[in-house]
Image (cartoon, rainbow, N blue to C red; front, side, top):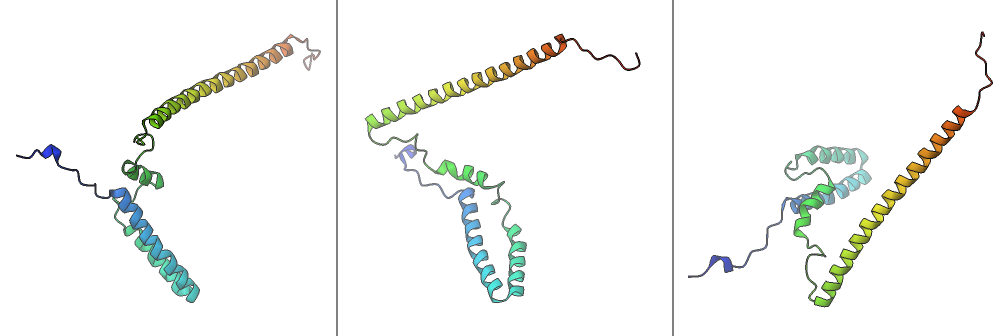
Length: 149
């Protein structure tokens, strides 16, 4: 009896992100040139065609529309290979890459903490200067006499 766990996996069907991108490209690839040609030939017909395309654009299924290009990229990104997650086939290079990425991440953390300390020091020195100037202003005697005295 054959085991089902040894069966090869079939490639996944394109997800809604790919379908959204394809639908948008096909619609825009058709609508834009047709509108331009219609505007060039007879502007009233071009305006009418543009209005018709604008009316039908919202009729694209709502499940295919997303919050924007970022959502489409997030939908498609699980299907795209990530460069840091797959081996290159060269063990030495893979070890070097992992070591270099870890070192760069550590340097980034160190640099961000340095910037935070630098900002805190700048804020503290500005606050100290302000307090010193305020103390000097209060320490100076005023020659002004109140009006009506």
